[in-house]
Amino acid sequence: MYKNIFDDFDKIKAPKSLVEKVVKKAAEAKEDENVKEFKKVNGRFAFGVLAACLAVVFTITAVVGLGAKPSPVQGEKSRFIITANAKQVELLGDKADQSTIGAYSEELTGGWAMYPNLEKYEDASPNFFQSFALSMFEIEGEDIVSVTFKANSEGVYFALSPAGYFQGEDRELLSNYSEMSLENSQYTPEELKEYGDGLSYGKTYCDTFTFISTDVSGEGSDKIDFSKKLELVLESNRSNAQMAEKLDRLWECEQKLLKLRENHTFEGGELSEEEEALWAESDVLSQQIRKLILQDSTIDVAVTFKDGTTEKKVLRADLVNTDDQRMWLTISEE
Image (cartoon, rainbow, N blue to C red; front, side):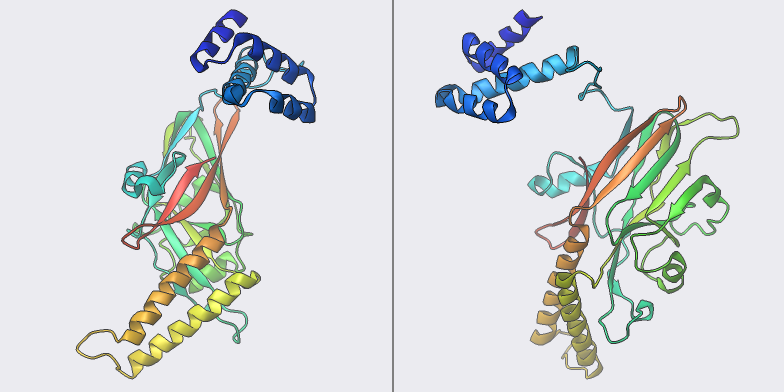
């Protein structure tokens, strides 16, 4: 076994004797001693030796494990995959990294809005809301019995449309959903449903929910299609000082624009320079607010199978601004 491992090192041109010494030292020494030993290596071989060490650690871990207890193989194939509008990632080019599995632009997306009637303090500028419709989001695996979603960041949650967008009554189909809760919002699900007209297509708001996919026979499913049933909602919060400052300025811009429209200051249907400047500033502010909301945002997706085992993936949400000023919500696997 070790002969095959060391033969692979020839590809990176690190001397076998040096590799053997460093690997042995790395296995025996403490962390600070590893650093000291590595610094002694001639710079010409440093990269090769490091790669060799990592190759040994990875190979031994995968084949026999490290320590007394067996460890799961890190490279083991996942039992489920997520398809999240992956074709749209190509449109982002180098703006999307290799971990990006899906992207959503403004199509079928609730526009940003500020709702004074939701505000608990009338003397403060209202909060900012934005929803992104997940028009294509599927989970595939063998014998899936349930899927649990959990958004982990304040101001990030879901709007559900169990029957699909524009398909009418969701009440009966909600029986497939359980453990729904909302802690990431300043508002209750009832408040959002009552005052959130234009915020999202879905009217059931939650940051955690479980979808049960088994039928009456108890059999699992091989594909769970959440396309046009899920939206990701972003909500600002004035407890964040940086966000509050941008919310105040965004509200000022909105009020000035309303005043200009009332006075009909534009001529021939064209925006005045002042209006153009206010719209441009509002757009930048809304992008900055959305970025702050999504900062370090993650979503847990846990899939339970018919054999009782559960596997989890962590998704990261971010925003990408393209050259044509379109805002894309990106979904990446951590």
